[in-house]
Length: 121
Image 1: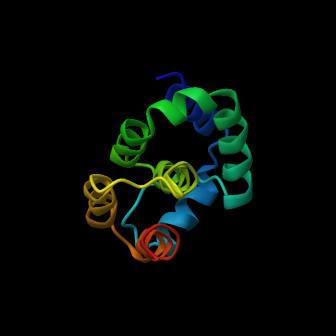
Image 2: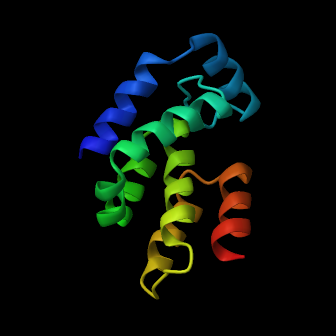
């Protein structure tokens, strides 16, 4: 998938080991990070999403699942943002399985709170 390849390439190009260490420490070393702060991550993400909007819209579930299976936490945040934006007002009964996967895997307060508020709430 072009979107995921482009996103991964951009994250690798913008990684910051010093930030990554601090971010992992803040999250009790439960996750690996590229070290890209939220504002910069969202800027990169939005730019790549805009270039691949059709692919993301057509393959939302597969892209969300693949991003969430990667180890770096920035991918998890992007997966959740995609589901929030692409799914809003369009959720189907079977989407609960994907949402459950996001809640159970790589679960921590930051992801659970966001999913509860913006997807389930």
